[in-house]
Length: 382
Image 1 (spheres, helix red, strand yellow):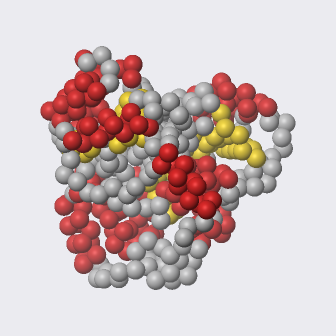
Image 2 (image 1 turned 60 degrees about the vertical axis):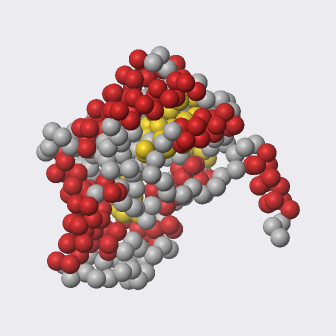
Image 3 (image 1 turned 90 degrees about the horizontal axis):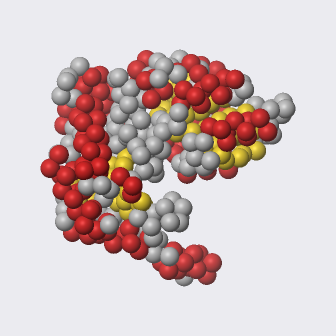
């Protein structure tokens, strides 16, 4: 039997129509996954990964231990150098997932009595890491840089370090802060700026290397968190920063120290995904170009059908339609599925009440016909 307190929490979830269940694979038109460029299904990346391992006589299945024990196989050095070069960073340190990277960074870098200021819409992994920190943390209103600066000034006489945390593309809204202005504010007040680029890498930047690179802010940012499980279509994450920051994380980041390392195959897949992204850059018909064409077309269809008032303004691959109420947004999501389209309903408490939404994730492989049809169907339901 489940303890009564736990059963009560499950019962409450069901009463609120917010009960989570694992889904199953389907053949619906994909408007829900993070596979923005279709790299997770790329036969080229799959074949190149396999070929690389064969050519280097690497038939090892597992890492055998943490990187500080026996798991630091030579591919780590090669791929971390590839990543840091691509993103114009001094170093990169690979973690097993984006969640691990955020937990590992925020739980150990800000020290006791330091100040953390974070955007109220930051991802759960960031907030979980902050909760494990001994620093004092305060949220500021979403993308409100005036509110942020007021908070910075409130703690300006504090002799301890201050950390400002945001995302370059927010996972539940798809919008972005004014990173140029944000970096100026942080430089003015000598605060450490950390940016999670999970949903920007592979989409933004001339080379798909993120918004920080696109805006040439690499040297204004204390640390960047990037992930490989979205546009790059594989698994893992990395923290970009200075060599001293990397040394510190290796010594004090518990999710890094006490986790079995990624196996060689995962590292080879990351390498192959970056290689493919570089190749894509040189093609006018690349997935990178196609995803931006699809974003533009999706937004134009929203305007054509006069639905823009329901959508959060976004230039990213994440386009969100606000439909208040768990029951209503789930109903419309199911109706779209019956018509062949996989569009996820995002429920409270994942997002605030009355801000429940349909989250459309766009991909390079979505056709204009599919985009038009799903928007036309949406118009009949709202």
